[in-house]
Image (tube, rainbow, N blue to C red; front, top):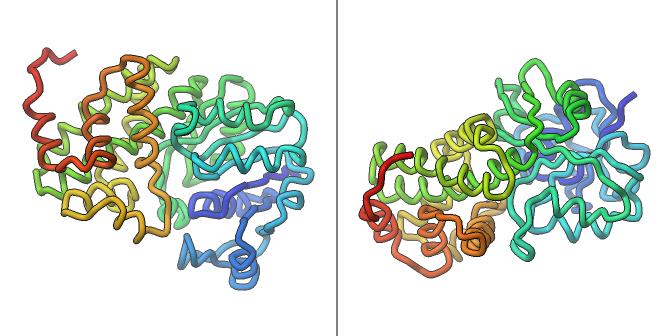
Amino acid sequence: MIRIAVLGGGSWGTTLADMLCRKGFEVGLWVREKELVKEISVKRENTWYLPGIKLSDRLFVSSEAGQVLKGSDYILVVIPCQFMRGVLESLRDIFPQNPVTICASKGVELATLKPQSSVINEALAGKNPRYAVLSGPSFAGEVSRRLPTAVSLGCEDIDLGRLLQDIMSTDFFRVYANPDYRGVELGGALKNIMAVAAGISDGLEFGLDARAALITRGLVEMSRFGVALGGRERTFMGLSGMGDLVLTCTGDLSRNRQVGLALGRGKTLADILAESKTVAEGVKTTESVYRLSQKLGVEMPITEQVYSVLFENKDPRSAVEELMTRELKIEQ
């Protein structure tokens, strides 16, 4: 029997754990909050992050990471990007050797400006982790209701990638393997910035034309940055790039789009974050990607304007207007 450990009891971690458990695998879900563990164990529901979804009776839930990791063949990491290094370092001693780690979180670490693959490799130093990343257009609320979804699984080891593709796929959750793990992980991170931008535009009621322009030029910006960090341009035309970008820029279930909408309607970032129970990775990712793009000399006009709105109190209307009045260029 294949045993899978899922680290992270948010909406996405809970959804993936339940999905894999219902596929017939032995699955353990690590949740830090003991009161949430008790609730899930008794009610078979995660009302904090996934209310209304009945979880499998077979799903094992614990706040003791050692119980969840023990004997695991695969480890699914669903810890928010900015907390991932600290959590994995604290658990490193109980990790198995050569663990297959599948990252299902999105972002670029702010403290080091490094992508998730580097963070996991460094946090689990000495354990020689084998890395894969799951990313693509997927809302936890829809996957948990078994609605048709397709995503990418990035893994440099082609044979391992195909094995994980088979493990993760179901009759409603279709997984495409891609050896360009760097492109897959960056696509999932960068689209959150563009979702904030699209939300700002919609919050200002700038219309569908403006949103379409932001999505299209945002994809160019994502590709440019991804290639600079070793990703393949064509990866950004796939599910973890264009697919995830379209979903998060247009779907109201997107936390990052909701942040942008609120900003466009006049709320402050501090008030928005104070009212939110869930993490909008796009906020911190905007800061880290902006800083890294400046360091690398990569042109990212949309990211620059979103950064100014989030961290320099720039008026959102002025930010969009500046994008529209930049020097005219030939489309490449």
